[in-house]
Length: 276
Image 1 (cartoon, rainbow, N blue to C red):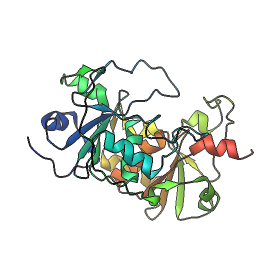
Image 2: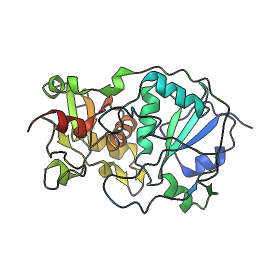
Image 3: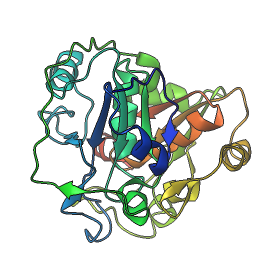
Image 4: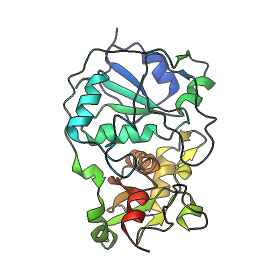
């Protein structure tokens, strides 16, 4: 079987189908249910060879009071190795929605030092549209324990303690991925008991505005979007409800060539720890 040497941040369904049997390729289903909207997109099928990348239980700090909190290096490395991740692996991540929680898995892998990871553009809906082969989600694909050595990259993450300074620093731009109705406090937050509001000096870019259907917009289109919101020298900090759709914007900004980070706690943490 062939070996893949490197990979970009986005791959097509055709590319994945052509390389599915590569010896060092791992495919991860990183699907989680959406906080807002129906669950009709959830599928009983998956891409052959794929394993479940469990964001909620394996790749989050489950002891944190806030959802999807970034795990420790030790926790991430242990669970990554269980999935068979080696230092020379190439990874493609997808989700049932199209492009949603797969971006969080991509961001986590990048944050912990794994470089050769890409998202399947359009996710499972695109794979199905191409009539490529599927297998039942009950099939357990098991790989030999990997040797991946996780190295945390602090430049990828922003924490609550830094936000006040960042909100006043002209070298940063805070961009919120929530819907405009949530950002403008027209509708209530979906999490019970969480107040509405925004982080000071933040602006709004609903995550679906970087998508066309299930797919990411072109690099040129993404560059135009971010050019209209921020200066080229600014470091972009993305936030949302709990760090999921902020990761979609992080993917889009990376493709567009902007340095960026994700505020890990996002509005769930900020709205809880601050008073309006």
